[in-house]
Amino acid sequence: MRADDFLAAADRLPVASLATLVGRGGLVVVAPHPDDESLGCGGLIAAARAEGREVRLVVVSDGCGSHTHSALYPPERLRVLREAETLRAVAVLGLAPDAVTFLRLPDAHVPGEGPQAEAAAGAVIAAVQACRAGAVFVTWRHDPHCDHRASAAIVGLARGRLPGVRIYEYPVWGWTLPPDAEVGPAPEGLCLDVSAFSATKAKAVAAHESQTTDLIHDDPTGFRLEPAMIARLCGPRERFVAIPG
Image 1 (cartoon, rainbow, N blue to C red):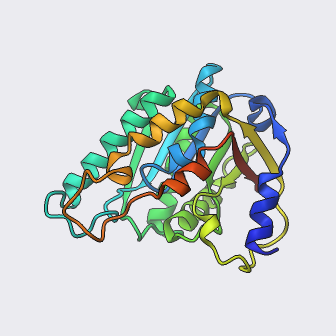
Image 2: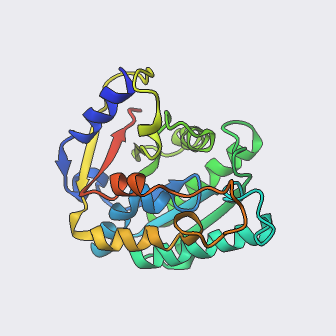
């Protein structure tokens, strides 16, 4: 199926309750970078916490690839900043700091196989066990970013040790794919109505100031989320593509 048709079909997936989406127990969100959790699953996290469900977040990369030419924010300082932004963002969504695990794999070089990937899969399994998760949410395997694809592969490595746990993928960068890119069969899955948490999600996204403002102003090549992308991902629904066992 073409990418444009797939994503349009994902927008039309049935809207379901959180209970239908997750089943019993908590849930785990796997974010390739600090900010992906708010962009792709901010409403999901807020909705789960509003119901009293436990949530764990696993942030895979160190996020140091967003501003590689900044003298003010060399890699270690940038990592500290982005982790602090993440903790502020998820606090808005209802998560405590101890619900977040930072794996600190190298941004733009997250492995999808090998010892580091297996260790990351172990961290996902530990997060599932910690909250007795009924579902894991990770970025879409066809997202045009190597770390997003690698994160999906890491969850794939964990899956064999997660019997009965549902796996969903959420697109973040999918809409930047060439429209005619082939991405496999039509999507199955569900949408979650997160309109009640729109303001909360927007506040969480805005907490990632290094990615949404000119906070890091000395790197003309630095990354910045475009308002159109934020608007697309902060709409009334979040899309979750079910990955069959």
